[in-house]
Length: 398
Image (tube, rainbow, N blue to C red; front, side):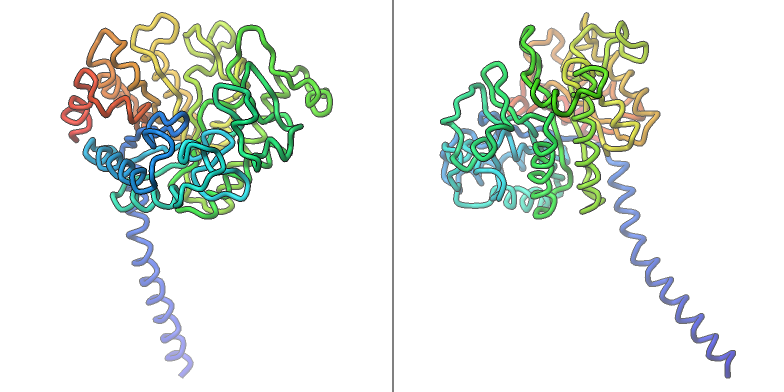
């Protein structure tokens, strides 16, 4: 009797094992297929209405129609992802408890556009089997001016004016303040918690690009928090490192399947400043933007990195081919996927009309390069020099 009972228990256990194994198999195959698929994406910039909507103040239905046209084009171009700017400055393209509505929708910051654009975008993108990554500019407060009157009354700048820094006639949140970093992470987690996005994406703006010899005015914060560091530069880098690490952990604690990626300026450091650097003579993430991108990759704080390699092959200061090789060698040492940020907006400037298409083919010579992201949608839509046609019939025909 005991042996019969034991047999039934074992049989039941085996049947459950088979059921769960059968349930997991398609998921594993789906994840493997996703990981092996070449990532082909466009950035969709809402800042200054670069890509969408075409202008502020359009009716909600017209905004929706424009976005559907955008998605249909992306699908027709044989691409599989969009990187949509959902927080271009201190505003949001979704109902937020922490940020006012974006003025790029209604024409006035803080005015409800009459629908939830991000909810609509996620639904329509997924309907077409297109990934959608939510793109944030974490510390920018204003556009190309420091005019406080352009900000909504519920903007974070008015709630915490001591968080605001004015630099070169623009307003920024100061990443040197722990409470600022926490606020930015909370605003990003609003999207992680409430929308089925495939990724969270940050661009190249951490500390702003330097303007001449003008120093970023963060002396008060440095005096309070940074005096134990060897230099102000080390302190600034630590601020951004802390922010990236905490953001990554926050995202993954909520949903491990959401990818976290950053698109930095294309040069980490020049070789004349660091033997590990690239053979370039350009602005540097590490020294000028205080972004230690290699550290983030090595620590595993990113799912993907998408350096903006916005130069042509043979450029005398930052050669495209040199940089693809350098980033590939760095990615090879980590678990961070490498996508290449590509300058569709410069096609008309380049002498070689096939430069962009040939760059895509060149990327494929490096197994570490898992795909491309083009800046930006608007730059491709008119098919400059036939580049879009050649992409579709060439590398994207596969």
